[in-house]
Image (tube, rainbow, N blue to C red; front, side, top):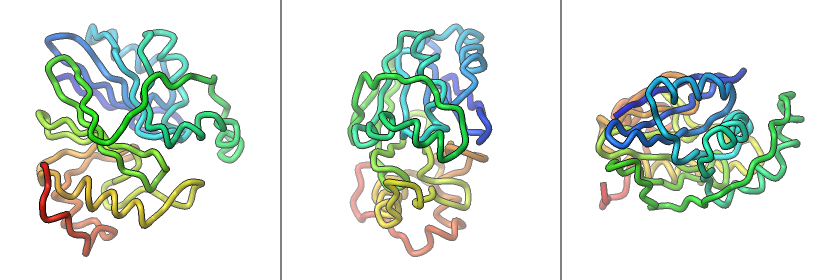
Length: 218
């Protein structure tokens, strides 16, 4: 499977391009900025973008959505609980002192447990609210890879002091949805270096004392 991570924009947000080598279908996950760089990667691998998937709707994760949608025709996917942030993107831009990106529609709603097909590859949606009301992670079982958005970082977790954040909800999301994943699962966070579930379970100071549910589908 083709997997490229591009840190983009002034906050160096990790945009992921996931491509199936057989079908040449691709997802662009969190195109936060620098649409031309993202599209260059797509062209280099001769990929056809079939979905633009957003882990959440903070401005640093959605800044290049309009350009990507215009260039590829791919539908934009987001959990409905984060739709209000898209409608009020101006307030985010003002708060952070960032240029306001062009408006874009949400074409498909994400829901917990959804299975998105990328050629023959399954990409599973894990609903992980807390950093934002509609935050989601994307788990690719065949690759043992988790695109974590801003839910989980190396040695840290997502901030919850922004509008819609909820620390209790965030830790419950991590406990129920992420900690049951296999230790070897590689985590691609929204910012910073990759890690693994096993490493974070052992060393992340914010996760000490969190126990996954006894029974798990994973």
